[in-house]
Length: 253
Image (cartoon, rainbow, N blue to C red; front, side, top):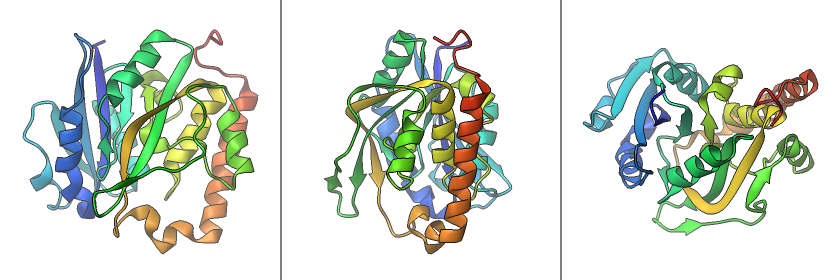
């Protein structure tokens, strides 16, 4: 297996203009000798809006498909992943310096950890950044702790799923992202923590762009009926996985 990190990005027309910023943040990453990254950009649709913003770089591939939401786009992008690790990078976000190397060091150094996350700063329209309190301590996140916190804190996870760095075999074993219209990344995070230990780094790993066209800012995202249904399905999946007794790694680590 190549020593490669596959960075996966779902994109649609309105967010395509931010791809050059995401690309610059990716190019600024420094990896240990012998490691490399590839960037798989998957359009959620088949428009002509995205391709003009795709960088001309042999490490970057662009694919299209019928629309199904960001979770579907990311999951189908896994067809083009061939290394041991997958990193999420949303089209409108930017990696912080050193993020890939820190994530890689954690998972290469501890086989009992299946995934890693990191601190996030909001990237505001004026270019300034803003943090927020409540991050967990730097270090491991034991199985079940994410779901417990999520339930106690009104369906707010203690770590941000947009920073996810995960072992590809674990990600594919869980079927990729959930088939939900939103919260598909939170659903995956809960499932991951149901079967494996995670890690949180207090070093900033992501700049999370806030902008008017953001999907999470639309009224449909906060519709209470749909939101309750999404949360119920995500919780049920995580609890079923926890009760199944399946663990990653298989020997329980």
